[in-house]
Image (cartoon, rainbow, N blue to C red; front, side, top):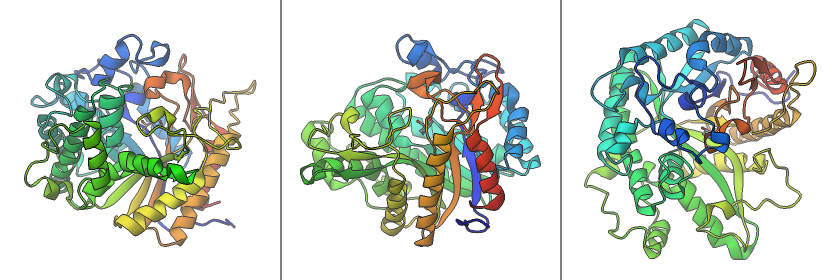
Length: 449
Ligand code: IFM
């Protein structure tokens, strides 16, 4: 008998993203993405790693589906590589790309696994970057064209759609901090990118609905739980909440951009022409009703008097006694509990899914080929329990997707950081379910633990 029982129909699974696992970077008519360009340029990714081969999922997807089935997954969240579908971002459609995802969706359905599709998980066609990327409004139009092509083709079988994954990361890590593709350091460009990502989301929602009747459509944001360790750093914690959470949440839920952040960005000179990128009608577009909010949660932001609000790197000051993952992120399940309550009571999305939660631990196989990742198992157990407590408070949480199904290409960190439930040997492409995966299999079977 489980002590923690999740609601009936709760959807359990795991997530990945195209560039992080597929490989086959230049096969079957695929165009070049900004991550191909960025990872191929020296100095951008640890060890010069690229996604050229990654987990070779493009060729090994039947084996990967069999693994998911063996692990009891009920859903699989994956993203579509835009340059596989529209190699130059718009116009000519690459049928081979559509066929790949069509086979993947059919394979999942045959295995009784619900396909949960993300349209944009960061691999923008390079041709669109050459025309200005997300800071250019025309990229939003191209996204809507892409969303139309994909949802027309897969919409009969895919019934869960996420427009964007973590638009904050796209806009700010890519265009302001510069550690992600395309590698710019320009605040104003990042704020424009954020707006155009929101616009493209709002414009795509009705298009997807039209092409995929009865589907659920939503967006996934990355969240932090921002707290002040000292009373004097309260403003700094609030700044990080605004920068990371509210800049996207508020417009999506009808509150427009948060006034405190607009004032700060104006003072800093990041908005020399004000919000000139906001056009008449934009707020109506951005607030297109959605069916769910996707939540990606990993850790909290804890500020103290040394935290510099204008330095991302200084935003996490874990207390000395805190437990850290192998990415040095603090393990803080209470942050997930707090966040779920806050989102439900403050913004009221009709439904929530945890579309990513998990941890980087680099444990590998022992002499017997077993991967005893006890720390990941413990991390997941405590976060599942936190989510369960939130459900008991009335939070309409409908599913949980662990990041990630496989160890994979962790962006600027390359292959050094492992988040998978399943170990990947990048030389042989062997997959080994870790102890956490075997435990998770039972959690799914019992709908609790
Ligand atoms: O690997 C990423 C993923 O692509 C987006 N969310 C966070 C994960 C871990 O950093």
